[in-house]
Length: 292
Figure 1: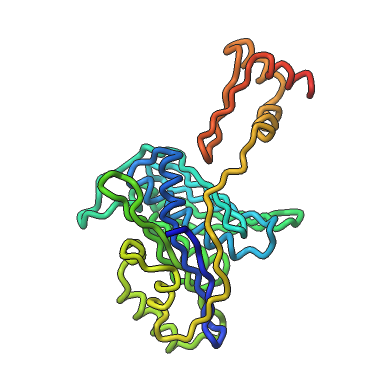
Figure 2: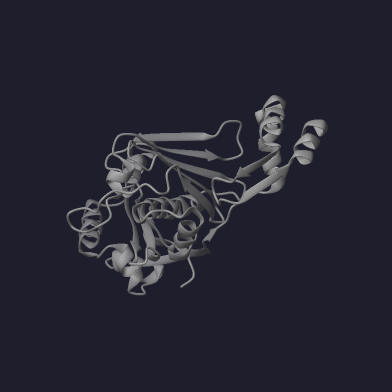
């Protein structure tokens, strides 16, 4: 199944939902970063959340950065997305791992850590980006993000994120949903949603069974008349290039480049997001300095 997400709303306009299947994207990220099983689950949940948050932005040039920094061994998780759902991400320590929980599930909360912050930076083309932040509550990411929405956005949200890692450590299924309650939603409808969520299996298991985002939306909001507003393909896409890497090198300063030439005789820069390596010969480094 191709990765995509849908955006839906109920007929009264009180409830909106985003549902994404992200199995291929998360597997590509796992391959790029060679993540441990638990790190795959953590990065995959964050990428899935970022894809749905990215599509919420209005303009093509808008850019979302999602940063999750806990006190666990994985370090910081960094996600960047736009409203076309072109997304990329990395973790500080991709090989970090922890024992599974007593129930056999991957312990993402322990790997991420519950002491820290979740931060969003939205570059909307204004003079200053919009920055929102909240403290982590569990490190499980979905619960942390729901808390962020209430505290920073004043937007009550129900969030589910899941990554099912296979025995060969590849990604078997991944996806998520965000249900947002708009101001006029009734207490009765909130109760219906809570009951439906409590009776619905984990989203990764639904995707593993072959359910589509449309199927999952109707499963979660079976008590409501839902309309699908749009469908958007999801792509793991890094926009790095040799030209951008040259700009990064120039930004570190002439002295640092000269030191690189003297000590190594060449240089190599690796993109954090896709692990592409850019090699610069001594002559290319010298030319950078001269052109500057």
